[in-house]
Every structure is written in structure tokens, then in C-alpha cells.
Amino acid sequence: MERESRSAKKREVEALQKLALSIAKLSEKQIERLSLPEELYAAILTYKKLNSNGALRRQAQYLGVLMREADPDVIQALMKQLQNFK
Image 1 (cartoon, one colour):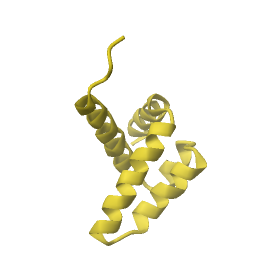
Image 2 (tube, one colour):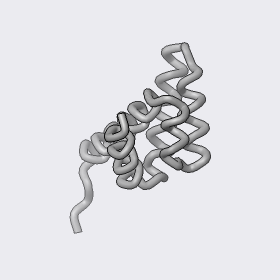
Image 3 (cartoon, rainbow, N blue to C red):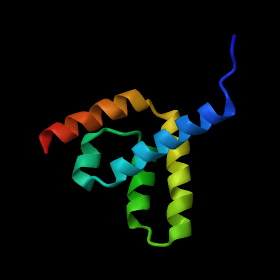
């Protein structure tokens, strides 16, 4: 049984964080249609309201943590559906 390298784990977390940030770029109506877990949805809306660079960075890291708990495959599939509607 091989252990996943630390670098591979970091890349995975960064990818989930990027996905969360791309969701945050959508309109609130589109985000609602994704049917995200309530905590993740609230955190994304909070991110959209922030202005301070430090606060944005911390919130983005928090989004990455929440994304690890959510099913990223389902979220990515929903993102593709939304992109098809545009």
C-alpha cells in the first residue's frame, strides 16, 4: 500500500481550492442551482463579500477545506452543466 506524497496532497487541495474560487465567480443564482452543502454555500457567499486581500486568502483556504468534505466530482459535473447553459 503506497502512501500519497505530500506534494500530491498539496496539488489536490490546491485544485479543490481553485474549483471553489471558480464557483465563487458565478452569480448567486447559479451558485444556488449547484445545490452545494449549506456550509460551503455560505462560505462562498462570504468570500464574494470580502475585499481585504488577507481575508480573501484565508477564506479561500477555508473553502479548500470545505471542498475536501464535499464531493468534488458532483460539484464539477454541476459546474459543467452550468457552463453549458451560458
